Image (cartoon, rainbow, N blue to C red; front, side, top):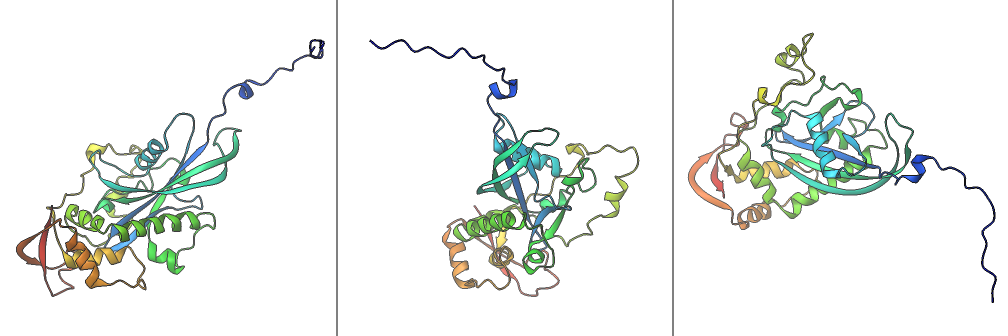
Length: 285
């Protein structure tokens, strides 16, 4: 018979508590936020070289919850606000948890988010953020693609990936354009980044953030649109040199069977003084 196995007489060294506890999953939730302003596509970027708005997720918090908390931190966001949220995919990166010695490899989930029509009226908290790395600004996507606005090399791939996902989704489902227009009340001209009323709110002793009930939510559209508006909005998502078959695009809009013809004509919203021609009005059902 074999002799029973005997373990060597060695002492067991104590293990730090952090090694006996399950390691926390480190996830970075990135949100690239797009909006339509003055019939062109804009993106919300940080002023500094820290990339798009991002939050580290630890423990049992879901990534979707982290994205929502990022939006709450950056925008004055009403409870009834609508948005189109598109997941762009997972990436790996090295991170270090702020205020902690914890660091290592992490996975990052990047969301691309299309804000509701006229959402630029919900001013981003440009100067109310106590964290400098969260100071943000609306930037035209055309300026980024043309090189007028330089991006940090680590930021550019993620932003372009989110932009690709957004454009692919619009190409596959042009009905997103119709829903956006039906929800849009009008299209205002762009205002300076810091209008006078915004600067007045920064008086000494003011609170860091305004209560949501003090912010007037943008008006909701009446559900009507024109095909000229739909074409103009569709083109706004893409670069000017992108070839678009306009006649086929109009057929795709009508093929959704979601448009009811009305006995009415009107010019493009926000372009009433620039465009003389009018277009038939449809109601999105």
